[in-house]
Image 1 (cartoon, rainbow over the protein chains, first blue to last red):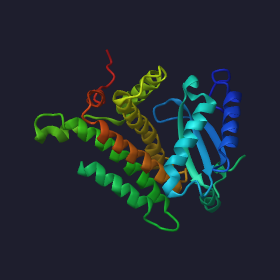
Image 2: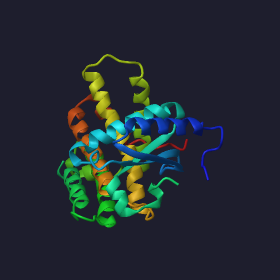
Image 3: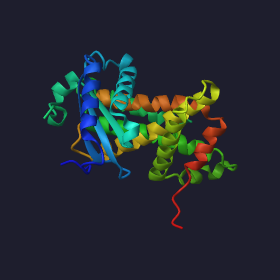
Length: 107
Length: 166
């Protein structure tokens, strides 16, 4: 169930922005998922779960990779205009294969 | 700043403690420790401005997580607006970008620390934890660059502010 009242945020625009970012960031990005939830400060926020390729998650390039991904996603969803807090979590493709976490699979 | 630096080093140690299959306990503690490294960096730096060293520990204890995050969020949002005005590049802008990085990292890490400490349903990966630690390391580097600047010192004082009821 969505926490965000319909009409308050254009969820279609967010979905389209995320899809555009996902396509543009391939093959470093395998998939991008997100959910609305309340953060620790009580703000409705967007929580991103992003699976990245094993090569993109190598320690030497991890920070550059994730910074680039975050910037692109924020640009595409026009985060500032939405006024939503955003949080990002990442894992590599092989880590997800090991963890088999359904929350990180596309529903 | 031996204590905040030691915490950060400890976070990395925990994240890499099990070479093959990291334990969730190690990863969770690593995220939490990385957050506390940043929290203690800011509280120690604030307390350093107190004249008498013997009372600095007590001053540091005045800082509280939620009000600090509120100040950081406000500073970050204020700077986001300022950056949109396309200010000329230079030292002043660099200082503000470093400050933005510190404030933004604090807001993020408070949330991640909360998840790591209290949400047992969330599984962490080493990649994610290392990314969080690297963000705190970058915030430490930013602080080293700007700690003597007026903007940075003003930010520290604001971290002590709490919402007044009247």
